[in-house]
Image 1 (cartoon, rainbow, N blue to C red):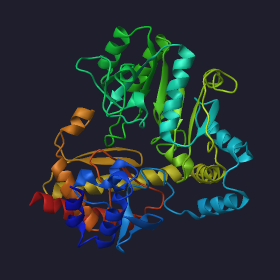
Image 2: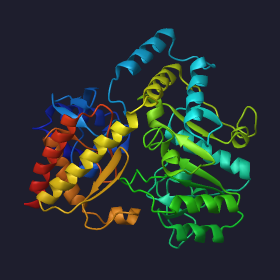
Image 3: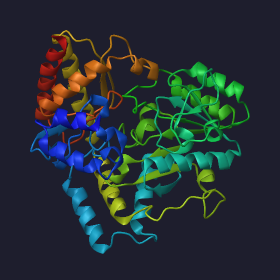
Image 4: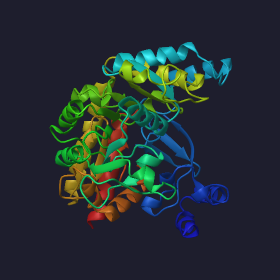
Length: 439
């Protein structure tokens, strides 16, 4: 199968195909994260040689307007001068100490200032680690074991979260990956995203046993799926009433939908918040934060253990501090909103002109274009969309110099580096791609 994929791209992406063939000899599937293999679009991956601003450049010499943004972190655009300067200055002082630095405290202070729900922070190295730590904290704090999560929301690859819904409503989950023991999967209950009645049923069935509800406040790992009116508010009420912790996975939405993330945008406070992507400024960094009484049960002050040699890495914290300083400047989120709205309107018009029916979901600077004539509110809705049409659209856009995520289940990320000209060029490329689909 890999050979077939490589042959398909050989003429157009000769250098990328050669690089992929070499990578397959030493990396499982030729990549270090599955979606990078382009399996969702029946192609071989494009290998990246560099990036600047809103553009990325591949080994084959092609330039693309980038709407992946390293899957969300590059909200300032690639190689932002302030971030590069901060990273270079930090690197000259040493790459890692495994000891406290002033930059860690400064970053924690910025996060706490941005999020009303966060009183203390633990810095980490990845979103997966942040969510894993939040779950351990919730179980340690509540002395209960069950976690409720939503279908279609991805929270990293830790064992208890690589699960799928069982056969009945509010039942314990089943493992969705080899290597995950059933005994671990059974501690997670999966319910549909945006289905508050399913959440209520899970609370009733497992009353007194639930440690936390874990949710992306805006679904962003099944494409962009906003919360329906009252959904997050009701979950907050249920958690408060039953002494269950509410964990918001804001790895994608944190510092993207607003300086204070989805919690600022929707006016809801979580008990624990998981952050990543943007707070690293393009380097590996993440955080979990929340109420002081919960956070203080982390070691060394409490019995819940977590540690990491590279947590609060000085180069990553330098990039993070530089990024958050820029995002705190006036007008940043207004510009992101304006650019994203322009793109949304242009894509909708281009599809309509070509006679192609789409449903576009957008929240702030993230959006998804689904090939369906129905509203998309749940993971089941996403799965019912026309994936074959998406694959054709992806290929058409890539051929016209627009780099989208190689999966129908991902978001488009708009950055501060995207210019009006970038948006207009993207809309024009979409016109051609939609026309090809409509023929």
